[in-house]
Every structure is written in structure tokens, then in C-alpha cells.
Length: 120
Image 1 (cartoon, helix red, strand yellow):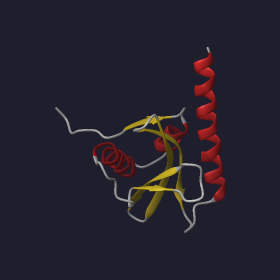
Image 2 (cartoon, one colour):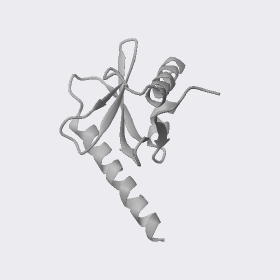
Image 3 (tube, rainbow, N blue to C red):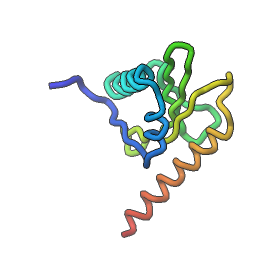
Image 4 (tube, one colour):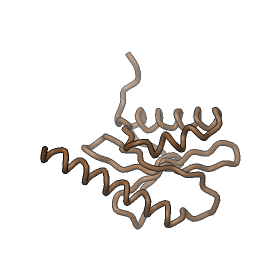
């Protein structure tokens, strides 16, 4: 029997996978390791998972591999289900607004599709 999981990670469409496929194996391993932390730790250190202030319930999964810093946007749905949307390599101190805007759009698209699927 494996470790207890406090959260499950799910992916919205292929946005994350398109990013993931273009990373080195070292970065991929670090991302997978970070996912395990998010699933298995009851309290996740802010070093790895942080609420994005000024957004409508967006969070960022924070991954660092060497000097490279990556941000993976996500949000919660149905309690402990983490929906992973888009990701990017961070090259500036501040998270670019266009990345936050894209994450908000994808989150809204997710909920709209979910609402439509319940109608059918």
C-alpha cells in the first residue's frame, strides 16, 4: 500500500503536456517529484505550492531545477482535486500578466465545459 494522498492532480486538456514534453529529463523528474509532494503532504510548503495573490483562486506549483524556475498554474475543484492548466519557464522576478491571464481563461473554460457537460 502506498502513501496516503491528500490531493489528486488532474490535467485540463493538453496545455501542461505540451510544456512538459519540451523539458529535459532532469526537469521532468523534478516536476514529477513536486507532484508527489502536493499529493502526499497534508501541508505543502510555500516553496512548492502558493496561492497567487490578486487572482480568482489560482495557485502556482513552483519547480526549480538548477538555475531554471518553472511555474505551473492550477486551481482546486471538488475539494482536493488539483486541476493543472498551463505552465511556463519563469525568467523575470514577477509572474508575467499574460501568463496569469491565460491561466484565468483556461480556468474559466474548464468550468464552462464542466457546466455544459452537466446539462447534457
